[in-house]
Image 1 (spheres, rainbow, N blue to C red):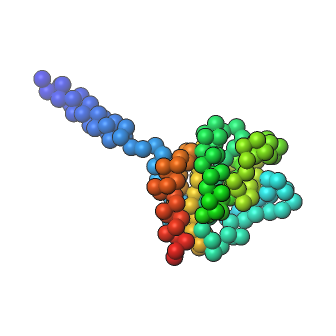
Image 2: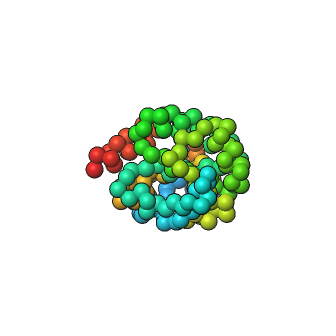
Image 3: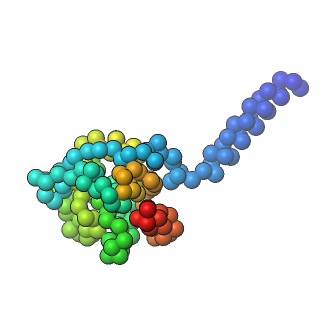
Length: 175
């Protein structure tokens, strides 16, 4: 009888951890970057490779930083959301074409439209590593001081935009 108690206790502990773990939202992976300065970089612009962009250029502004790629199917589903947001002129959206060929990124934007103030090219994915990119798409809300205030993993939906991102942007802009 005693030899069954230990396996039963171990099973119940494992089952409890699985129950809690399965209830978590995988899109809400905590990021150690939230509340910290956005990693600095200087990358060439996608459409004008001779021109560079750095997050330092955005000091004093609240902005979105969207990591995407032409090979990303989820990016295609979120793209209309960003197209609509860009027409509303609420917040500038900057993009980073991640681990992609320049010509593929340019062709993708010609086909789907370009909601971005500008897009940088991170062909080798080095900046993505600095930002802790798990996969694309990922979107960051960055405040006037250059601090990451929110990270969203996965496609941004109208609901996420309306309930989380836009209210946060408006709050940060009012500061």
